[in-house]
Length: 442
Image (cartoon, rainbow, N blue to C red):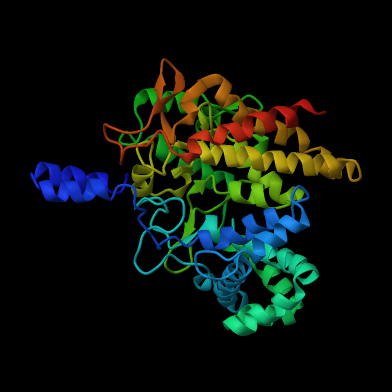
């Protein structure tokens, strides 16, 4: 309906009754869109969750895999074809190490992942969400699921790749050590997205932003300058009084939103670390880095009183990006409900892991526990503070009377309208109970 509505309104304005009837009769028919590059890598992760679950019986799993689907093949065959595709797509970068051989948007299209607006990836061609957030996790899921299949359907696992010409899958089945190598290479892919700025460079870029009268109103500027970075040091202290809070003494590091055509990072801070928090087991040094951008207040980080921002273009030092990814940009300086929920669920995963690890490696893991809990509590409290507001698809903000408050996205100068009722409008249901249980444990 969302895709067909503009066509319907156009036909109605033109008085084309036949076209109006045709569109209305087809509203329930799906529109197939093949430009996305992320869903291929999601299926192995989802299927692993099902096939390796302790809550599903072996009989039920095998029954599902042997069931014939609408393609006229078993679900196992379809799953193995997906595995083969994932392996084929991941091979180029594994063999070359060149970021331009990573997973790229198709052709000249500007979209291909969840940030499906023209400016959502800031003009980039290689999304962080896919190349760092999904590929390595997907390859691990392939590996772990193949182990399950070897133990339960060994004959089918040998026969189907031969019959269907799944040559990449066949190779990695015969050479599991190479699959481990591929996983290791992709685990290091984030180095291509890494952005490191010295304290002086952070100060220069943020100062240029807050002093730009085209980008901020006087009220917004004053609000940001009064933000407490840490240890009682405000943004004004940092920018104009030479004070450097301990959290910024070594500068700031974050992962770029995307890579450009030449494989260079586009330095827009973003929330797509959510995929890593949710899918991966993160070592302390990585988690420390990710927590920092969730803790630092905007415009230095992603934290605001109204939620974790989807993007923060301030440190890009590019006025064009700061303008198109502002609080009127669909995937800009706004809050997306499902992203904040995914961040929350990812923090719960890390919290469980670190509590367990802290029992054996007390200092290395336990010192991060209060920070994980703090970040989770900040996200989980949004529902309590703003009620049903957070069931919107996304929302923006305004500064009024010295406070930042959430406002509905859409209308005015906004890039597009938001649809407040979508499947992810129910996302907070999955976070509320789990966060209460996680934070209730000590």
